[in-house]
Image 1 (cartoon, rainbow over the protein chains, first blue to last red):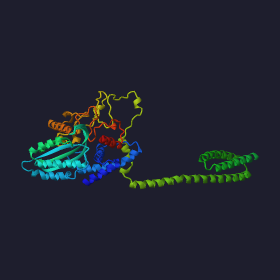
Image 2: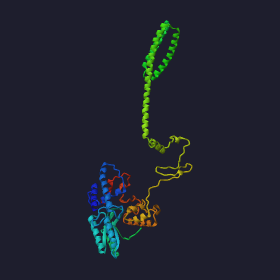
Image 3: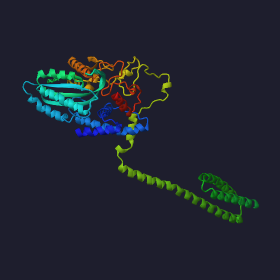
Image 4: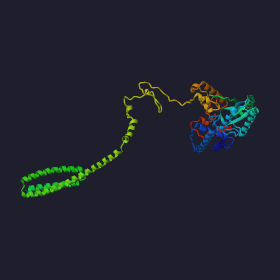
Length: 214
Length: 277
């Protein structure tokens, strides 16, 4: 899955001819929604027609990546970009969940935390942030911490946020991360305080996972 | 005596002329039949004059008469030969008819009532009905002016009753249909594609009667949509801006307000510019 996702990114970048490397995840994200809506673009110029053909191949690749990565994804029907090497994919998650559920340690509960990060973060910064929060969770008594990166998703409305330096930024996109872990109920409050004081986190929410049967 | 001899000479000339005309018009049967009839009339006149001569003639005249008779018979023989030729010609189509009858016998052996060629005719008769092309211009022409049945629509027999007013049946639009079970299992704030079907173009939650789900499912959908709004996955309202479409940015790009003439390449560059900004 990592190899397939890695191969899809260069194709999209080559087709789009984007020189900046930081724009790769957004470019790969941009290519995937097109087949979802099955739009039929009308090519008016030969130049655009020549560009259109490799892009179609890219769509095929992105579709395959979607089916591979998100067989048991949280964003059903969504799309993604680069995955963290530390986070397993869909079947891995399924296996882990099946193993984890009966082994719930006594005194702990299962929680999940969804946080939205700044879209202009690089991969190294994102990995550092992930490790930071994993350490916070483990320090608070957490076990079996799993991280799922769902990539850059366009926000439905712009979010204006002021950082510690007093600067105000308006974000139109966000990187979505999902943490699933077992921890003590008392450690959720300091985790939320840490997320609130972090400048890289735009929005965040923690919720307890409870089994429902509908 | 001389008068009788002159009469014989005239008759001989006439007969010879007739023979020549017959030989000349051989290919035309019509002309042949016409000439034959004229010859028959000449025969009668010849016999009558012959009888008269018998009553008045002497022995030397009789010898001359015999010579004339010989010539006459020879000519008749040639005519009879031609008749025989015509008979032979007539027999040829008869032989052809015999051959065709033999062919019919051969066909009868392989014939079946199922393969008599009537299948196509029966099919045409079953799928076609005769109509008058000028029926519209006739005085007793009647039609329903207050109902229209577009292609693909269904109607009952009573709908064709011209004595009663027609009922307007607009075509049914394709709407999103779902069940309570599906909603309770699929509704999640992460499944934005599914939740987007429960909001209007302005981003307002649609009422429960529009989807026909239970109150419990409607509450769950409402709660999940509000959670998704808090995360920025769905809009609170889109009045004044373009409608929310899952997977697309909400920036006011130029092509979003253009007509249906989009190019795939244009989707990437403006978004990239937005990202840069």
